[in-house]
Length: 116
Length: 116
Image (cartoon, rainbow over all chains, first blue to last red; front, side):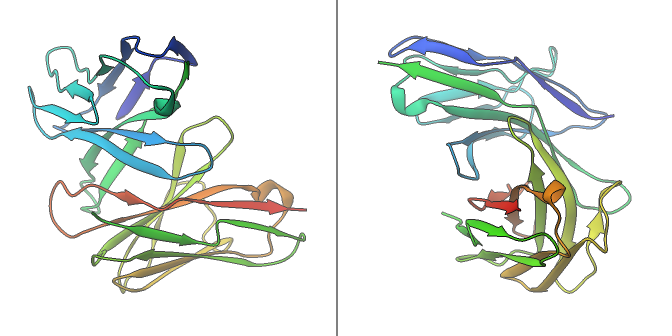
């Protein structure tokens, strides 16, 4: 079935360090790919998305490129801040054939801890 | 941007009580709303999908009579946890989606439900 695999956390970095959170997916169709961020005690916020191969999503200094050949959508940021500490979820979106619903499949999340 | 409001943010109640959680799209019409459950340090598990004016479609293993979903208008969906027990304690998150292909889901801030 369709699935998303993320690197396990926590990822611990110092402020201004380079961030990579790996994400790979398995899908039978051609999914859209997303990164969501969850701050403590809150719901999810859409961070960025890409809808087709080779698209690059970017927002707030984060970026991720849809790589069909490696079925990956790794999240990167050149210089993290303490305020980036959160849980990051990679997700894919597919249209379910029998219902027509667009469904999100989430990875397990990666906690990022940034220290001053 | 798209705003989804979820209420209440936190509820504590006794075992056997029924609890209603509201999810509202404040600045757009949501033809589809989703309800998720998140266990501590885990990913989101989709419970059900609802289209306005239709019965909700539940995921396998989710009890329909336990988790009642009503999507009466294009801006409001409710989840009622009937006769809640301690094992129902969890973080419940809703999301809302506009009609159309590749529309992202916009998430509420979640409801922390604690059953004593």
